View 1 (tube, rainbow, N blue to C red):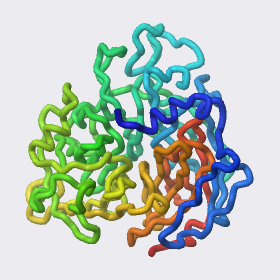
View 2 (cartoon, rainbow, N blue to C red):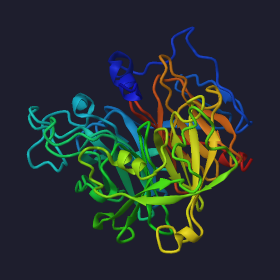
View 3 (cartoon, helix red, strand yellow):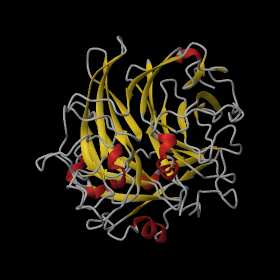
View 4 (cartoon, helix red, strand yellow):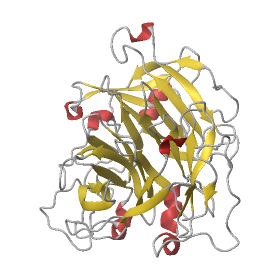
Length: 458
């Protein structure tokens, strides 16, 4: 069985859930290293939560177990997250909670809820309680630094891992789970759900089935075309795109395709045994249509690979930049410390004429040293064009960092966690003044401010 952060965090109940666990005396791992200076050396946090460069500060704005406005509690396992303008200097944060049916005690429900509660699915043989996975939404005032309101916004899903923001103001939350109806639950899982950031209260849980049923990780949307790009957290994963029938109306269906580097004859991008893809080279992409996207046998990636789609090493975070997007592959590369890819869509992406000037993929970054970059997971594009990557190491004593990556593909330490959990959900307020990020378990959401303009491009 593949060892994962989920087994790590949920297997250490006394460590992860009884309270924050920081490094024991004498157990602090050696500090990581930076390939370029970035924002400068990290300053040790006297509160033993988060080390940041000089001039930066953080504020905890939400915690696991806090009672929200609707009477539910902030769930644990805070993962991917998106930030949206909410008017008058305020930001709406939509946050995933990666909880499985067995994690009901870590969910939002302090007591039994009624049969009329708006949820996608319920646990069988447990008083028909809603599944604990889903999303929460909070409103944060950038000027006052206060969380003004917080509520449960999607209920009844499984392992909402990452997702992506849309140009029309919603969050696409993705299930990293393919449980079938009858296996302790009443509905099939493995779908994407859409959560409008401006909606107060629970949204109608509508699975976007045409976007595929698989081990979803994250999503991003090209604002020019409305095409959605999707990652998959498997060792033999594919990169998908969903071309909607109607831009911005994903529930109206569309077609699902997988990326292939057929012209270059490359069907494996993982570089595990040999350097098939090299940095600094662009590869022409083509896209392979996929039928039966609901994939009852969870074989979508296998059918795609049989048609020539390219394999990736656990595709995870994905984020739209400026005319391009980036995505991480957690254990790609010869050292299996992680890769980052960049894709530049074709002028006629998804439409006739695309093959005349196709989209281009390149290996933007590959780690050869765990001290410089190790198991990058969620990521976002910073206002200055750098990437911010959340590390998710799988060691007994984790030493996770937020890693900046320059436009030239060099890594630097931006922050270091003193808590024995991963970073997740990094994103910026629309005005670029504040970065938000989660500690996964026990969940804490942090707002980080500082001189972001101090580092521009490099």
